[in-house]
Length: 499
Ligand code: MN
Image (cartoon, rainbow, N blue to C red; front, top):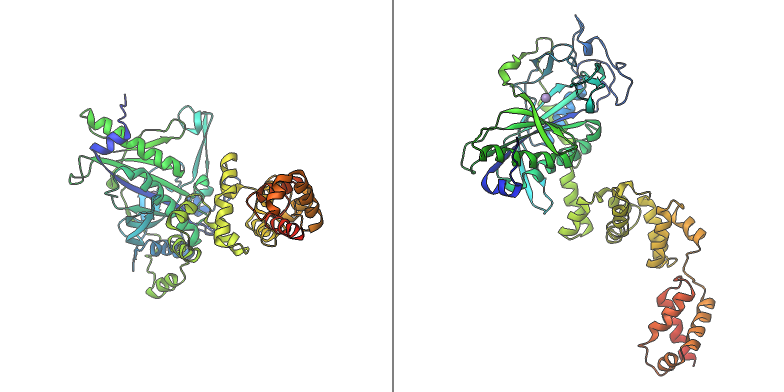
């Protein structure tokens, strides 16, 4: 029976150490070692060749674009790029590995010794050291039918889809991540998020977690304190959402603390993550590298990227997400906390597009972090899922700037757009929301208000402008909020001056 230790108690008494392996599927047109096309969602076993099936006599040819993408990733992670490296065979049997080995890299990875800075929610930066980034191929996919939750146990039969066999992968392995303390779950999540954003910015992968483009294996161990040797680790496999990464790390910390408190030892093993109840369970006893009988791949020539090519790739790297955030922070003049809220709310791209649509950074932030953030929360969706575009916000802001809408009316127009009533101009027309810009009806309403509140009218005529708000309020009510308060005030003064 697993006795869980309260998380806060566990991290007070033990020093947690993380290690993360991230696999990313590269978005090349074809596979790593053959000309089979690869795309998500193709019918099973339609994207295969003798090479991806490992048929006798089929020989691999390396995909140059995949190597370029791997180098891009390596450079973005501040790694050194190998002058010379080889592929290796990692031998094991599994039905989705038709060759009985995975073509991977072992002691000669394409990229090594790097680092990446990860921004945490409180605005601090945590540096994660990268041990290596190596190239390998993906396995096919087993589909177990009839069992519970798609697992092999209890299944009636299993099918294999080889479309994914041979899809190019880069696997990124961190060094032990020390010193995160109680923030280990957040560091783990933020690290994978940083990589995901980086893959997208680099254009090497669509990096969609829900499609398995990015898969994280999370290693956790505990030790008595920061000076003690590393404890035995477990590896929770294929944790495929940011939230699950945080939860899985928290769970393993609590579970291992329970094992150690009871005088037991943590078993070095892989563990399965269970999304439904937030727990992990034992997988297989973790094999040592020896068990895989790695040896250099004899069918592929070594990879020797020229220094010129590497430098060309370096020069072509796009602005990376962290640098972009720093630049926009300066350009927009947001306070640190404002910028952090914007990033955490996933509003950065939306605000940038809104600014491009002609809205000032301050106004764009007000829209997305105000009304729209509230609406997204109410509807329990992400900001970007709201049925409104930055261009529509731009059009709405133009109407406000032109004096056609007051802020209050603009919020009603926004409601209309979110309700699917069309662009701001259409909502203004359909709901009749424009500011009453004709003085005639305003003067009529003012006269009526002055007549209805004679004592206030007398005070104003006597030069006491204090109670003018009551008149403006009455005019607003009469025009259903469609008057411009400043203009009404002007007209009241005019009326009073006329006697
Ligand atoms: Mn791997």
